[in-house]
Image 1: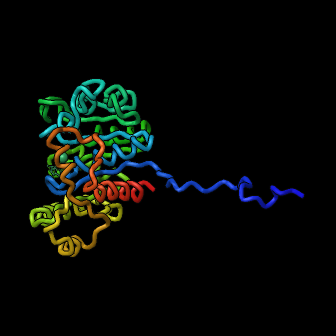
Image 2 (image 1 turned 180 degrees about the vertical axis):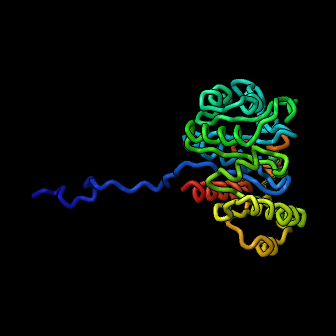
Length: 268
Ligand SMILES: Nc1ncnc2c1ncn2[C@@H]1O[C@H](COP(=O)(O)OP(=O)(O)O)[C@@H](O)[C@H]1O
Ligand SMILES: [Mg+2]
């Protein structure tokens, strides 16, 4: 008699399906009202993907207040090369972009493009729609995941405006306040006239504090795909210029979950 036949120790040959969701690549533009958390959220999504061993490029569009010096210590970066040098070229191609990509010493799979400390849009020769489009097309060939941290002042910001038009998806952030609603009602008609595909937008309330009426915001924005809560630990990281640090405290749990949810829904 084979005692092993129905043994509880019998080896199960069936392979269990992986619970890990497959993430497909694409270009995500993070855009929204001023100070709504665009840079913060874009950085955290990029970090989430890099931690999952996905090659990701984070593009920081802000040329008025370059964010590269604000998101991590410069000693964490392999080199100091500027996004401005790429856009100043008559034509942008893959090798030019690759040459200027900044790798992070402690986070494999992550590269960053942005303006350097002290620079502004006048530091380089002017660029136009062509260079911005070529940059995004080149990035598509370089890495599967592209996160573009757009500025709010799209009328004067060619790269952000082109990113909104060319991206596969837009995460549209707004704080729960009247200024954000005013911003959106002012800007959305311009984008509609320019032919923006509104279907690719995910509306998102950002940096929500406990005293804020999220239900009013949902009504004002015509529904919300995501609700990103305020995290005091994240606020502290921002003040310290360490946005790539892990969020470890319990009160950051809901924020971390929402970043995961956004990433899986947008790229899943
Ligand atoms: N979820 C959040 N929790 C805590 N602070 C946040 C959150 N989102 C944004 N902030 C804070 O809001 C401010 C603006 O963030 P930032 O990412 O620079 O906005 P934007 O890029 O839209 O101008 C910063 O002080 C940042 O710490
Ligand atoms: Mg910003």
